[in-house]
Image 1: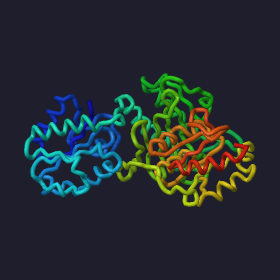
Image 2: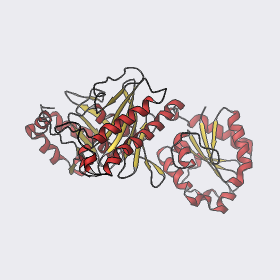
Image 3: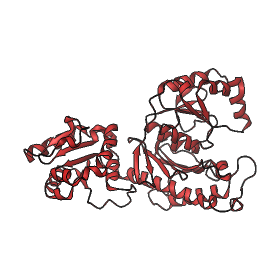
Image 4: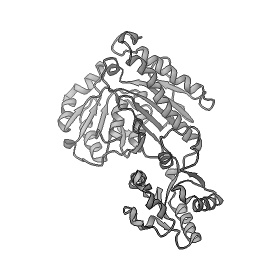
Length: 420
């Protein structure tokens, strides 16, 4: 039925055990704060684990909790953070006649009272679970494990590259001449990531598309999963010690964006999302996981920050400079930034640091992970090539915007240019 996380004070364990038994009798899977977190779970605390992986977070309030200062330890803030995004996922249950004003932000509709009658209260809880759990929560265990693997893969891929960042520049020599440089860090980070995928029996035969040869030309599977990797996005920044680079792991399912994980080692942040769940940011050093949303405002480009990618490829330069397109785009927005890392820029759109992003001539590995992050954060990604349409694996020219108003304005400018 559903995964339910029970958060409570140990002094209330006796009544919690009764609640758990009833929930399990009704075929729900119950996780408790004192339980051993299942193997492979990466989030930093049981509470964060419960908020993300479980379908519903049940907060049990009692006089013991009030006296102990348990809520003052930050639990209420964690629950509130999730509550504001998905109120149906957090349920408050009063175990006795405690002062419910301890959580004044909770609406009465989501407060269940067990103090008068245990049976009536649990019945109300079961009814709430039956009506409130929506399709968003229905992620199978294999896909949950795949997401966790993607998060670990993004972190480990960049850790491979960071060895070169922290050593002499001479160690990170170029493996390919010309402007489209491939460094030893790129090669080793991708090789290690692919080997990690091949070492997992369930993933070993799935196609992998990566920036570095020989995986550039691999095709997207029409059915099943396709891995899309950029183990080091922002190579020029990396080479020049500009701390704007990342590793990106994307997964397509039946040719559509499904999972995205981007690790920014300089900020020590992991952005991740899976279809059906909102984008989150794991701040590794702080041990916290936060929901991530695109900005609904501003609606006016003149109040918005746009990210772009400035390519030196002649055909892309011609498009961007032809008919003063770049000039018109720059004049339309309040500010324009070229970060030098497409995946990081898309992560910034997903977190509201940028309001829009535009790129011409992007490759598949530049896009997949970031597209998942933006879409699951409430943003929009469109192919702006020959005609404006939904993003697809063959997209090369695209825009990502935090709200429909900015998308319309940006597309309006681009459509006036015959080169795009």
